Length: 468
Image 1 (cartoon, helix red, strand yellow):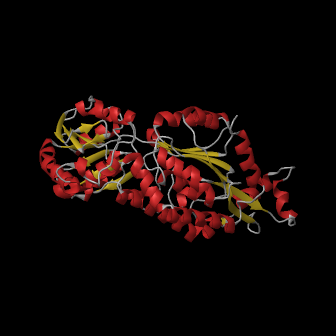
Image 2 (cartoon, rainbow, N blue to C red):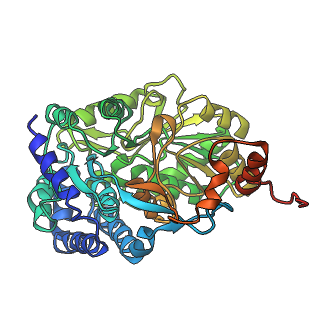
Image 3 (cartoon, helix red, strand yellow):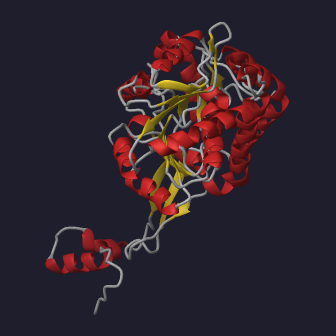
């Protein structure tokens, strides 16, 4: 296997214990901070070349949010790493019982193209913080960013413990044949199944950050202008190429009529009368992706936008009205600047519609009545949830981010990333003496021994009184 030597080299480094000290982990994380600071301009340029990403959006998602994750980790790593002492029973009162935070070993991070810095760096921060050696595989689709990562990251990190592999589909298949101790994958559900199958051969644990069609319910009681701005921002950010973007709107026929002019106004406010000329609206990453998204424009009727330019890979911010559940735009994750509106009679019908489909990565609900927002939250299931806004829940390092069911497995961000890449090892360190206390559990057994064992080992319900 072409990657066996690399994986073995990293495993030897990990076994040497090099990555375990707090000082080493902090030094590598500080180096990632320097990478973000010193390569800021190159990151903005590479993401602009790959997908016309506006510098504002690139700075916010690829640099600022990464620095937040980094600083949160640097601020707290010392306490996260500490042994966690736990409750003990009567028998072990004089012993030490704790959870040791062990690294897994050699881990693999496979990143996607849509946020090509953020989605490799945030998992990498947690993997380093947890004391692992890491192989990073950036996406070959965002080729300028891939080249930047491949050529510069090694100048900042310890090359004995961290490696970048550039690979297409065939090479990645070979890479996955190797035994890793953990695999973190971000991408589509179909490739997620391939990764999970490869991991199963070595019984390797995985985190799968996948996608899905994220519903956005808009109730009849809301501030239409605010809803339109927040939904348009979330849908058209990064030209719609965001795994947690609102994928479709569910609302009543009356609300659809009110939303249309408000969405048209919001799109004009954001991108001007011709979004194609706006420096704040991106492009589709590749020709294949462009053609797939363009084919979805035949769903319902184009109420706003709909213009395309294959040469530029431009698709205008588009809203589709009167979309039916059987239309092409409702059969797959859109991952582009198209927002279908599906008409439902009421909230109950919207909730039934959501629950009849695979569980999404995010659900959005808009209403001035918090009872409506809470009903959608309580009666549905999704990776994450945001009431009265879109995307914003992922900006908090204090919230876990991840999918459920078809939208993924596992979670990360902040301490959750550290925990994802950490084996929580249950440890009990007993006293070598006091053997008389152990005599109760040794044969020959007796009813008296069993009674005493029960009294010393039993966990009782709170509030139950024991009379001795």
